Amino acid sequence: MSAVNITNVAVLDNPAAFLKPFQFEISYECLVPLTDDLEWKLIYVGSAEDETYDQLLESVLVGPLNVGNYRFVLQADPPDPAKIREEDILGVTVLLLTCSYVGQEFIRVGYYVNNDYEDDQLREEHPPRVSIDRVQRNILADKPRVTKFPINFHPESNQNGDQSVEPSSPEANVVQDNEPKQKLA
Image 1 (cartoon, helix red, strand yellow):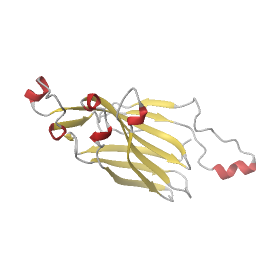
Image 2 (spheres, one colour; image 1 turned 45 degrees about the vertical axis):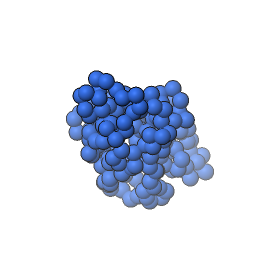
Image 3 (cartoon, helix red, strand yellow; image 1 turned 180 degrees about the horizontal axis):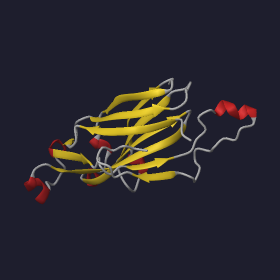
């Protein structure tokens, strides 16, 4: 059983210009007190073929936490287009929202992102070089891909002989959520 459940993720300001900051309103519940911080990360996948083009857009620590419901807005700068190959700027890519506890990732929410020109004429005939200030991103917010990983939320209990769950466990639970409000279980 997870000690933290994401109850909702709302993608704000979508669609938006490529160079505008990302904003996500994240709601979650904490079911047991946690003495360490949760680490939330937002990662932009710059290339499907090469993860060296991935960009960590934001990383925030939240905690310690008591039992209860929480909500915050995670805002992150857009990816640096200079760190993305020109042929990978337009088209579909992925944005990952992850949460970890004591270095163990326990949930990953993936969104497809479509980057294209706002202008119909530019969509029909791309300029020789990408005109980044004319590119619009559209996060497919109603179709997140949620993956849950079992972790040990109380590693100090291992001293008493309890078994821990490895964060790289192959028992990841993938949940496809198609509800419009993005309620994530």
